[in-house]
Length: 423
Image 1 (cartoon, helix red, strand yellow):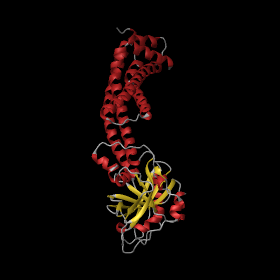
Image 2: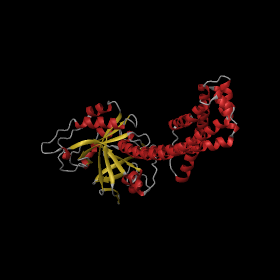
Image 3: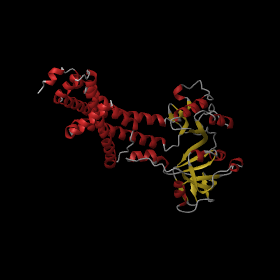
Image 4: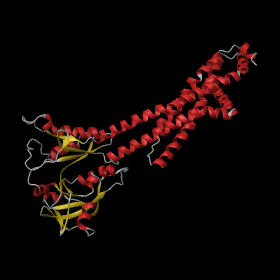
């Protein structure tokens, strides 16, 4: 085997230009496939980061009706929705794929929030427990977090994000200032911002609205114990689930969803479509759907690129047939000295496999370079796939074996007497 490989390299370097031109089809085909796979994988990673976030692993479990999220309003019949207590919260936290859980209320207020003579529109009010900030990776940039006494003593304190602070205070120091929400005073305990540096890749105004538009006006967080003072009706909690990993998001959300729905009693006068139930956010499913679409496109492009591999394989077959013809006397001499058909067959198959494998390795290098070139020119994300590299090199070797089989069989079947007399 090693002797055959040595002879193969000797033959390749003995005819450098002819060997390179023979490998060119393989190089182009492999380079195209590596570039396609790398850009598609980079795009898939970008989709995942944009929609799921940079490792937050958060799943919203919200009330829904007919498959759509709903915001409870005064007068809505919610008697059959469970009140999430401490025991239920601990049960959810102990679930297999769940790292942490927090409960919250949420309402968007278009008016009624002010500081002195300034007012802000479209701020979200969130009433939650003491773990909300940590689960959502918020960092206190000024002031303090909630403390347990804020909940025990039902204090009217709040924490605001940077956008809300800019809207209400216009550069003033917000901490320890008093704002009014629906005419009720709340003391600003702290200001928060995201603690990670995740920024989605924005390529259009629509994508900007998807990632930033809804939350750009800011929000105010208050203790859930202060919520009834602002909203006179009883409102069920929504739930945020922090999964143990990105891959566990679906299972963690589903487990919490099913657990909460097990407490909901169905109303006789409601059909399934009108029944209010908890429903998990299907962000990961959306990611998978987009990635599947991306992968389908990738597979189509790979099949198109594979045509050049077939062309390259035909080129290998052609050059190997020429090589057999050129080395007819050599083959005859080897057979006359006792070389078996299997040895001749192995020598030519090895030469074809080495030729295409070398082309595959050069193609991988060219493909990586092409992928980064496309990334720089078209601003497309790239992620090099090691499995794709390994498969490409192995596949190029198989092309050499398959298309080199006919010339190798022809060489092994030569009659030694005819071969020695060949001019």
